[in-house]
Image (tube, rainbow, N blue to C red; front, top):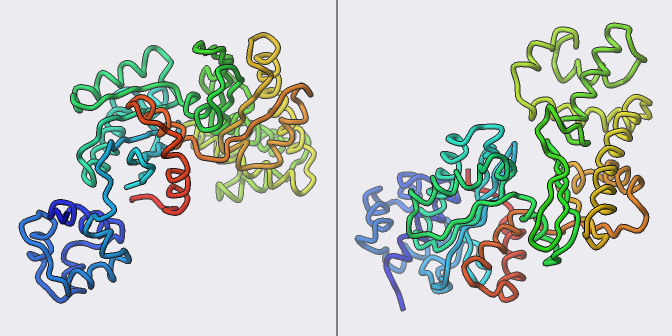
Length: 386
């Protein structure tokens, strides 16, 4: 049955996805901008000819515009947050993905409680412009276990969205949910920062992730910092020569000795941005780069081995994060340093879909009925809202 409100929502949604303004769409269709505005406010609807033209311009089917395939069940939002980016997915209980969105950091340890909540609200509001009938929001983010940060963020969001069920948990649960429903495992995230957890049924024990100043557990920050140290030492003649120095200076556009003040003016993500230079130098046979990567891989593996030896984790390890899943060199170095009796698992779906699964469970949805479509649609869409 045709409902004007779905047509209005879909014209607005697909126009926004094409990055067209109402005026630009009107110009293409050779109509007035007021007509497009009325369509999107559900005051009027386009005739058959314009409907077909709109579908062609926006590269969707007429059925998609009319909402013939609109799902009328539960609609939810899964969110995966970190120290450099936050990913949002608006989805339905049958696995339909309506929108994806990528914003900046929401780790409250990095940006503060207030800024974290503001960013999350911005993303949620943008998604709810496309579909207002959201029943659940699940946020899994780094920094949410520290000092009760997750509870504080949930309190703020619950006041803004009082009718929506909301949970705010650590992002390590996203990782675990993206790979397995096992109760016992070691779970690892290694990106800008790194963290290792031992999961024994419902109990989580944190074995690292104490912030970039205290952890030193093989993160992108650690490797980037070591690269800068090596370059500075080389430039001052205090340590051995390394290709890292020239790569750092090329990136900076200045002698490395002049970069110290700039480094201290930036956050840990900036320091981590020097990590690819170490892998570049490693690929060219640089001895210093090799030592940096091996030392950091061993530091991370030592924490994982400690967790597996001292907690009831079933000898299963889930490895995630860009430094592991996006880099075969570092992944292999970590694998080489792990105890041989450990079974390593690497999620083949992104962490945000783990958050979607947890959100669906929170809302009483059978995830086995949505999983296949959710995963395929995530990869098919392949882009984010701006």
